[in-house]
Length: 294
Image (tube, rainbow, N blue to C red; front, side, top):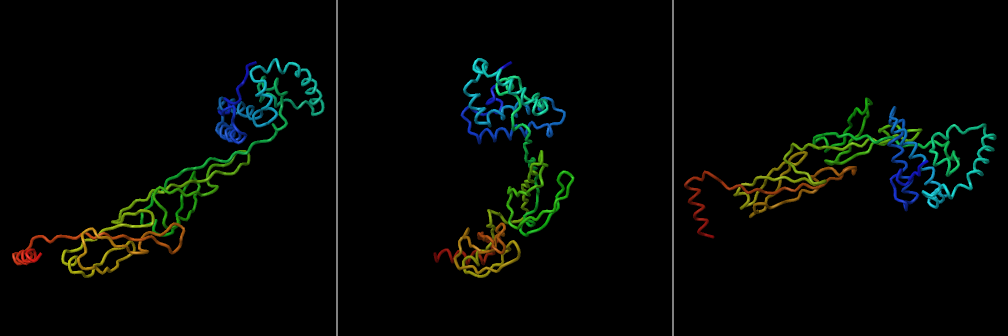
């Protein structure tokens, strides 16, 4: 019978911690579990190998024994074999010959560790798979809290989308993923948001950015300008001699802050000073006079 490298089976190093072994076992056992791979003989075989490796490496005494003897286990274990056989026969008589489950273990395991493990009867619970979905909404929808019904694996799920959700953000809906195995908990539904922006505003987190045209005369002399915000219009006072590219901040006129009711980011407006065209002769004459004054 061939020596089995249990560390290789669980895909861990020989100095792996108990935590590493447990994590590797759960990952591989879940991947190859017969309930998740029906009619797959190869997966069933791998599942048995993974369980056998875990029986050894997750038990401190078994692991110590395995590490000590390794591939030379036959010579080191020969003197114990008779004693184990005697103990096994006595155990079988007491338990009604409940050895049928030993088929799940290799000859190597049975010879080295004496057959069925006392912990073999326990079923390991596995958490269900997480489901991933993408939901596309318009930026105007992301501005307000609203409800949406999703259909996932034939089931309708009613969810609330909080105002301020961002593009690429993932929201977890607990317990709406795949069913658990052996009574384990369900997985979660992970929804990634794709937000389409069809507005003139650029969004960066909670803040919004836009630009507004400003005629030359208002920029020079000052005045008033009405600009659009995301949810209405506001009138701004323009200071005299406002420069092209100048920026003003409208506090609280940005995007809602995620899950913070009544709190908003800011809106930044950049001025684009527009130079007049198609000047009349009189306008050209006046601008010429102005240029001489400078």
